Amino acid sequence: MTIQTRDDYIASLRKLNLNLWMFGKRIDNPVDHPILVPSMNAVAATYELALDPRHEDLMTAASHLTGKKINRFTHVFSSTEDLIKKVRRQRMLGQKTACCFQRCVGMDAINAVYSTSFEIDEKTGSSYHANFKKFLLRVQEENLVVDGAMTDPKGDRSLAPHQQKDPDLYLRVVERRPDGIVVRGAKAHQTGIVNSHEILVMPTIAMQEKDKDYAVSFAVPTDAPGIVMILGRQSCDTRKLEGGDIDTGNSRFGGHEALVVFDNVFVPQERIFMNGETDFVGMMVERFGGHHRPSYACKVGVGDVLIGATALSADYCGVAKASHVRDKLVEMTHLNETIYSSALACSMEGWRTPSGAYQIDQMLANVCKHNVTRFTYDIARLAEDIAGGLMVTLPSEQDFRHPEIGPYIDKYFQGVQNVATEARMRVLRLIENLTLGTGAVGYRTESMHGAGSPQAQRIVIARLANFDLKKRLAKEIAGIKD
Ligand code: SF4
Ligand code: FE
Image (cartoon, helix red, strand yellow):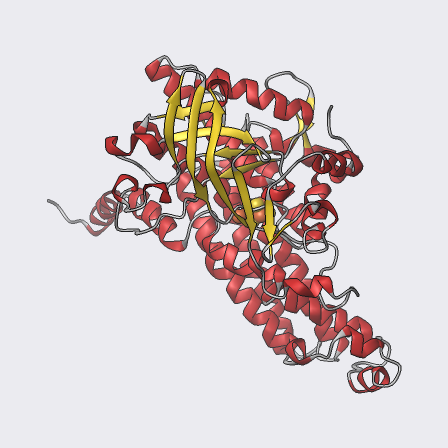
């Protein structure tokens, strides 16, 4: 059945039999768990907005496989326009949720595996692309959430996968059978896994011939036997257990990550998209990274919310007209729009791969993500500067609601006369959420390390910089003859 509405989506999650752990306990029902509900709401927004005529153009597309209308999170980018729409949609969803809405990892993985499996088949005569198209057709028809899985734990980073003392530190094939393979290992930092129906696995680094068993790509349902999820903690996560809706800062939406263990998981033949082709690992990794880096236009949307919250905090305490406050808000906007510009630019410079799927411009995509690793921090710093210390010394919502001491908080934290103290508290908690709380996982540390840490981008930028060309240009202008 096709998942269309929020209710359909929640019902589909209830049917999953996940092996999920949190705080030392197995969680039978993640769908109603207060720590996880906000993250489910964020993914549900990707269904709700697709049904909203105002957002239909950014949220849905015609499938290149069937011509039918599908959710863009399951779409293969078939033009530069598709790439551009992705960036615009990422910003819009960031504005509406102010968090990581999770579904983009799978979309970018779908696109990387689609084009790479095509090229493996072209070279080797394998049938991975046909396998993948069959998988994708089901994902599109049923409108499933797919979690892309790339990051292995990696153990000793100075050693290749096959050199690790514990061979499972990179996910690998441990058994080959006529009907499929058995895999063992883990994927770390899995964004949105609890809210996903399928997990699409890819290798994490370029590999040598000896790493053959690690060169594997496949998809399995998230409740396949042998899959174990251990939820990652987020700063201030247990505030969600306190009740109330002020102290979390963003009580409706959030994200989550988990360690996902593959404890001897069976993968049938028709769900394998790479199995030992070490030559193509680099392509798959680079194409996924290339797509996922401009997906961080999500942070531009979250940045819009943070800039808005910062401006409100200035309004509420009467400093909005101070020239340095105005200037800092302009600076935040400039930084935010610079990220957006590079995300759009790499999409406009997209190119067609042999499969027909479009790929972004690598240089500009890496510049985009590199901007994200810095500018979100600068924006967060300016937000904290304007918000002031109250953001981290504010008493709790329970104190505010208490009949005896609440009135003190109300009286002494009043700012400008026509704004309620509660409004001021809410906006400061939102800034706290995005810069230090659960939202900061997405806005700060994920901005640093998600879709590759800064050094990963510098390596690509260095490789594509073409300094020889630049030197030749300089020689020409300066009149230097060899
Ligand atoms: Fe999507 Fe952004 Fe979250 Fe990555 S960080 S999954 S791009 S919302
Ligand atoms: Fe991410």
